[in-house]
Image (cartoon, rainbow, N blue to C red; front, side, top):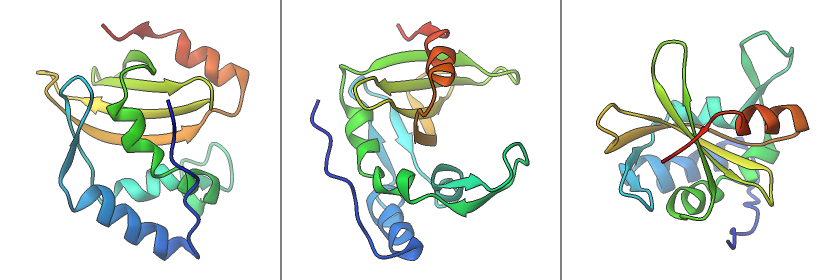
Length: 142
């Protein structure tokens, strides 16, 4: 799979404008297997910020590394050759993790019960073998 080049923009506000124009304004994006994924402006902070104090639960620092891969999200969701895993959250919500192993990059969506619609949750570079192993310990998506 060919991923787009890294997105290099001048600052956080330019990345946010790109997020809104590319993902939020169109309303949704269809995955390779027909799931309509919706994107919201509020997803920007969750996807492109990190915690200054790990474990604080407060995403308070813009993460350029994550933001530079913003255009990868649509490619990963629309490509059928990524590794797909299903994760049932403690609140019984179903998430699908799409993993590009060559780039250690994951895109996570929360799927509705009828599996025809979902909401984007986050995307990030998997930066440790432990996290990669945890992703792969989930059941594969069938």
